[in-house]
Image 1 (cartoon, rainbow, N blue to C red):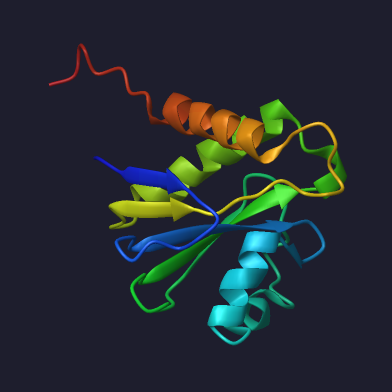
Image 2: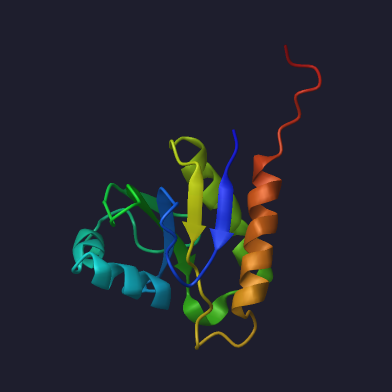
Length: 146
């Protein structure tokens, strides 16, 4: 299994999957709001009143939406905006790997930005810790497997 990932503020025409975030309580991240505008509010409508997806850390929801080039949007739960820590970013990265490993995604744009409310983790630190969590979750010991 191989992914090509890119952390960005702007969408890439080569991506087949876009990852956006939602904070607990239904608040979309800034990048998610931009993507939602492109699809005329369909993402917000799908998330509003969703019984199981509430934006808690580790939750994920895959939406089959065509945004010009991408065929799917994965919404990842970011938890409380004020409480984002490095460890939570790693947990989010692991949850993202779980969401992607069963999909047919190959080129992924990760559009997660830091929150203005969060003073402890900026966007660069968030991306680094998310990548660490992604890498840790992807580890598979297969030396003795046939």
